[in-house]
Length: 112
Length: 112
Picture 1 (cartoon, each protein chain N blue to C red):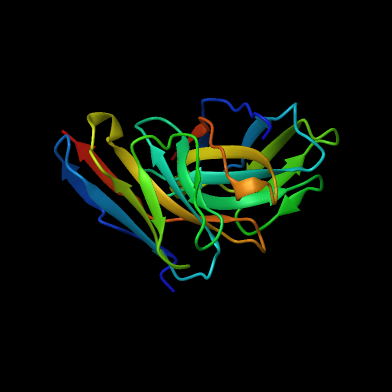
Picture 2 (tube, rainbow over the protein chains, first blue to last red):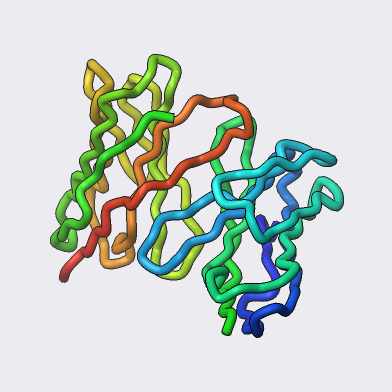
């Protein structure tokens, strides 16, 4: 039981490059989330998916797109990376029985 | 979701109880109090949550005042591994998207 997994763990991009951050969960949770955390700051919600086939914007969606591929997977895409997107990205799921959120280990992205 | 106020930082001696306060004076009757912590570079970890009764689990105790305007997270015997940022969050369970809003948290340093 791996919980929430994220790939890659680290990534360096040049301005203007694109990439997709992958998230997968094996807990059979319907809701999944993408957060970013800048140095010394709290987490900010980028996008979330309440269930398979639905996605909604969070607090800071600009510059990102998401895709809920199936119940297990929720990906985050940066179409044209900018230095302001340098951050740690966390994926999370939500248990509707306990309303606990479970977080992945994070992806550390640097855009130069 | 109601706003929370926490001390920016606090120190605690190893083996002693750590008492982390949180003010949520605008909390609504249907909002729960959640506590998460984030150990350096890792994803946030759920600790405990409650509505109005005091709660205890294997990690901590949560004491909520009778008027629900504040709460205290108690780590009964702090260890060096409890050094982390602790987030107090209040939100309605089942609200649209079930989003968590993270503030700045309290940076707890457990000293030998």
